[in-house]
Length: 260
Image (cartoon, rainbow, N blue to C red; front, side, top):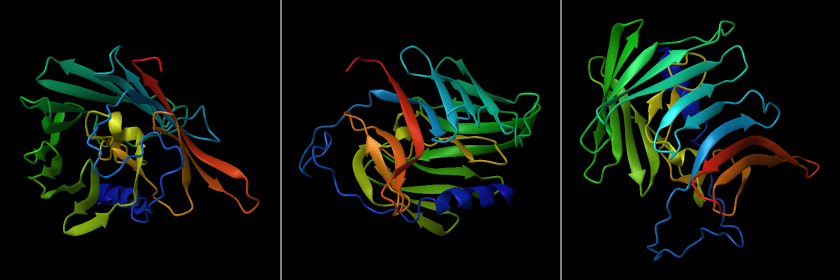
């Protein structure tokens, strides 16, 4: 029940999306018949609220060629900090181990989980553990084009179903209830570079650690606007107050394998 409540809280953020018009000079703007596919060249390394740069929501460490995540810290330098260490076992599997500082009061729902990959390098199943005791499993299912369409815990008859519109999830089903996401722009969502959809095991904050469900940014609230860099990656969210001043809400920082 607790997991469902946290998921509903996350979904509430995306049900009021509106479609922003492409801005003049948009480097990623294109006509509908444009068949050129852009390649992800930047990778999210830090997400934080403007008023708390030292208490990042996420800090992501990658290996040298950005093919693998090695470590993630969430709610950094707060009483709810969690750390996630990634251990890779060839091309077969990956283990994610959760830990927290001694002064952290984070509620951990499981202590580690093992992801098993199929022959295409996608997650096929995840087994969850609490102090070496098996808790549950989730199966990841894909359509013929390779898009993730469901995550199911068959033992407990629970999970999610995803409906895609191009490169973006436009509906998420929790049971039989759909939650709609729309209003996509031409700019890159910060989570697009994440390789897998992964659970956080965090009982107090977001249920998901990484969410590569959208290629393109969407506005989850009508009063929120955003800025992006010259490659089209969203760099911050902001509001304009009653005095016409820009009030930044959140920043996104990236690393890349090239020098623009």
